[in-house]
Length: 452
Length: 123
Image 1 (cartoon, rainbow over the protein chains, first blue to last red):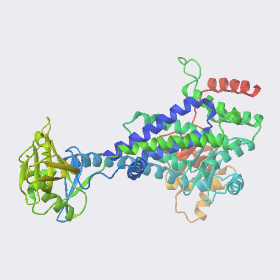
Image 2 (tube, each protein chain N blue to C red):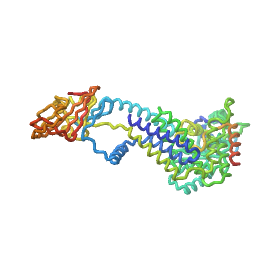
Image 3 (cartoon, chains in turn blue, green):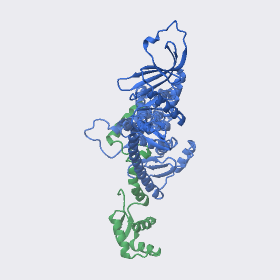
Image 4 (cartoon, each protein chain N blue to C red):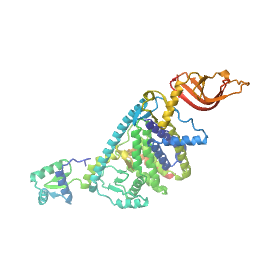
């Protein structure tokens, strides 16, 4: 479930950046680049990128020349997920179980909604195909073939259309992505029909229907996030605006004006404006924005390089949200160490990643550490003898001809929350005067709670 | 024309026969055509089908002559209209790319937008 929420965070941050950049750039960012940005938002909402976290951490460590952390010992808390391998079985802690159940509920609801909508779509598409033969296919099939060649589209495109004047309302849309079909029920003239078909061909070329379905997937997966619903409307708008830009690339103002009129004619319905609405309706405002984009001078927009840099920077910055991914921890348990296993599943514990050998070594070390702490600061020689170390013993006895014995210096610090930390140092102790020379830190272990 | 017609297979057979004719046909001639095809319908049966089709607004009967109200293409369009409505501007619009939203603006909005377009063209 953490992955789902992190995906939501990634996508939302990218979405907010999109709105911010769009607002700051005003009309200087073309609809085509806005559309690319929104596709990036969709990717961040749907594609988990936890592997990037490791890449960034490794890169940061290299840049900052940070030493590798002390080998082998990490601490996790009870609210982090943990999977323990024991004798070929997987055992989960409470945190993992809760997250897993939440994920299961989310997955079942999401799958049901997607399946239900998909089945409805397929049924309706089947009905359309069933009656295809009865609806005359217009001479526009030739036009579509020309467009296919012009835009180098490999996929076969079906066309179902009618210019029957009794056709109620205009309906022009494309559906399907591997086998796209253009449905065109309109009584538009030849130039208008050409523009309409070119528009639909560009949708097919750019796989816009697939992106639309992915956007729908985002809405289903992150239904609880209001930004997603806002982005869906933005996607629809920008998709059409960018398509208009491609259709009208290099065309004169006069043709752009004709295209604008076509948009208005195709959008017009039978209903009258509601009396309590002053000015354009919401749909009218959206259509006005589309007309503005059609009539806009393309030279006022940022060039390709600037636009690419803006989008690239946005993607790079947003990729840093991968640090929010929380890894599920794994541990191996000794088969007869039931006490350890119970502790691992129910408490905040330390564990080490790695194989059986590391676990065994560490288990012995932990037992050794737990059992052998007598003083807050102590020295343990290689034979296991323990000596207290007091602060005033730091003074050097000048007259002593020291006889140093190797061992380990341990410092035990208890914290107010009941935890403690045990720091081990390489050290030597003079067998004659007892002075301890402390060397490099060997390891540092946190215990929650303090077992000493 | 209705949004969708619910007709039986037999009624559809009658319609298809009528669509094949270029113009109005006598009811008796229609019966003869079905007989030639080997259909074992009685006159009363055909009459029942024609009455139902007339009730549904698909045919017209006048002085023994039968004519279709809508041609085959219109009929097929009516049958798929609900499917089109579901896809285009309906709740399945997530699966399509539409040229324009269905009935997006009122006539008043359209007039205002046309005026706005004229001002943009002048710039």
